[in-house]
Length: 99
Image 1 (cartoon, one colour):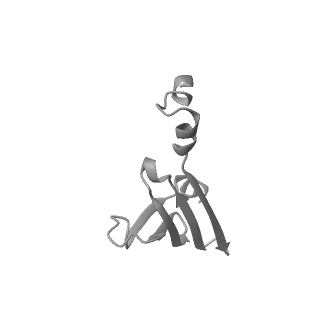
Image 2 (cartoon, rainbow, N blue to C red):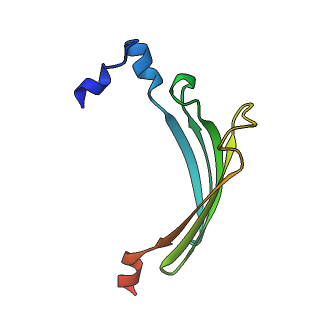
């Protein structure tokens, strides 16, 4: 693990390019509805993925459903991430045992 911090051929500068950044914000209303947004950045030499995300969530008893949409940042008209939808179905075992 320690070696991975100094194995880049171009040295420290390339090591810093290997770091990807992501940030987001989420708001829950009545612990049932969620609205989310975020941003992901990856250096051009390490994948060049840059996109915004927008999403919503719904929680009903032990089930949850999340949707998100990826919006490429910059001029990436032919990006495989263009118009990408993601969804998750969630089953909360802890909430089931509390009922």
